[in-house]
Length: 161
Image (cartoon, rainbow, N blue to C red; front, side, top):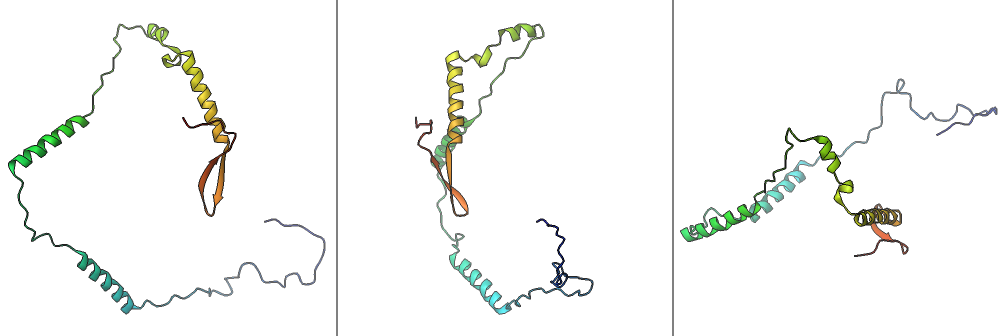
């Protein structure tokens, strides 16, 4: 907010209510009083929750179950062992530098662009340009309080592959 200075005098200056109350004069503040909590309604509410919960419980302590047979245990063990072996991480060994290796020779053998061909580098840069163009052409439509719909414009260079 700003203030505009003026040389005009008004007779009613100072008559309006102040923006902030002077709390030194009146220490009372107007707080909205809350309704007292009805203890009986609260007890009924919690009792209904407890009743619904106890009705939905299933007692499994008295269920008679047959123990697993030895063959079932072996089948499960083999199946789980195969699954675990299939998910074991493969340790990769990385070559280390020997103390005799000349670093300048290694740097001179390094391939530019990570070993990509010129065609692959051109394709990469073209794809990056197309992505940048597509991001600039995205139209965002507000729908209420949240943005929920993205629409690509007609002249967008991105196509489904």
